[in-house]
Length: 423
View 1 (cartoon, one colour):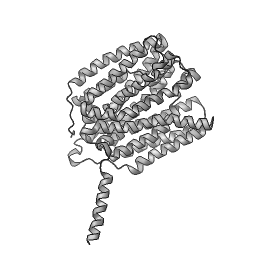
View 2 (cartoon, rainbow, N blue to C red):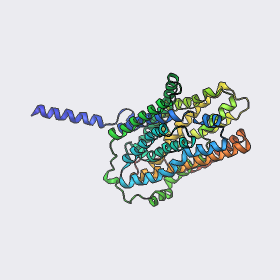
View 3 (cartoon, helix red, strand yellow):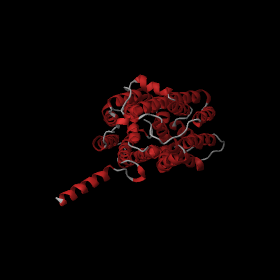
View 4 (cartoon, helix red, strand yellow):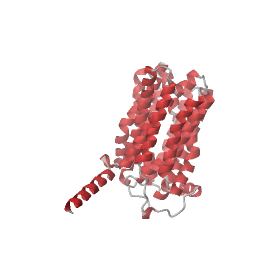
C-alpha cells in the first residue's frame, strides 16, 4: 500500500512539473504556442522573403501598385477577418479551435502555390489566403497567451512568443536559400518543404496545447458579439491603447518600403536585399525577451513609446544626405530593436485592459485597427512615392509619426499601468 502511495505521489509530482510554468515564469503553453509560430513563420517566410524585390524590380510594378498589394498582404485580410474570428472564439470559448483553423489554412495555402502554377494573379490570391489564415488565428492565439500568463508577466510572455515567432523569420529565408542553392530552380521542393513545416506547426498546437480555462470569477457576464466587441472601444483603459496603436500604425512606413528605401539610398546590390529582413529579424529575436522583461518592470507604455521614438530616429537617419552602406546594417539592427520594444508590448498592454471573457474579441478589435492603419500607410506611401518621390514621401511620414507620437504619449500618459488581473 505504501509503495502504491509512493508511486501515486511520484506520478502526481511529475504531472505538476509538466503543468508548471517553465523558465522565466512563462507557462509551458506559451512556449508551445511559440514553437507553433516558429514553424509556421519558417514556412511563410520561405515564400515571402523576396516578394518586395520581385514585385518592384522583376515585375516592374509601380510603387503605387506595390503599395496596394503590400497593404492587402500585410493588413487587409487580418483587418477583415480578425474581428469575426475573435467574436466567434469568445462566444464559443473556442480560442484553440479557431487558432488551429487559421494555422491549417496558412499551411494548406502552400499546396495551392504548387497546384495553381506561375500565374501572378493566382499567386497573389494564394498569398492572400495565407494572410487570411493569419487573420483568423492571431487574436485567439494572443488570448491564449494572456490567459496562460500571470498579470505581472504579460509582456515577458508575449516577448517570448514573438521571439520564437521571429526565429521563423530568421530561418525561413535561410532554408529557402539553402534549398535553391543545392537545387537551383526547384521551387516545387521549396513549396513542399514549406507545407511540411506548416503542418508541424499545426500539429504542435493541435496535439500539445490545451484549451484555456476561464475560472468562475471570469465567466462571461455578457454574451460575446460584434456589438459587445465594438462597445469595448468605449472603455477608457482599452480605448487609449487602441487609438495609440492605430495612429502609430497609420504613420509607420511598411517594412518593404523601408528596405527599398535603404537599398536605393545606399546603392546596395539587389542580391543582398533578402539579408535586410534577415538582419532585422535576428536582432528582434535577440532583443525580444529582454524588451518584454524590461516592459514588465520599467513600464509597458514607456518601452512602447521608446520603441516608436527609436523608429522616428531611424527615419531621420535614413533621410540624411550621404548615408552610406557602412551604416545600413546598423539601421537594420535598430529596426529590430524597435520591433522588440513595440510588437508584443502592445498586445500585453491591451490584454491587461481587457476582461478575460472578451479578451479575444478585444485583441481582435486591436488587430483590426492596427492592420487597417497598415493598409492606409502602405497605400498612402505608394501614392506619395509615385507622385512626389521617395525621400519626400519618407519626410512626410516622419512628420506624421512625430505628431502621432505626441498624441500617443498624451493618451497613454493618463493611463495608470497595473499588473492586477482584469475581471
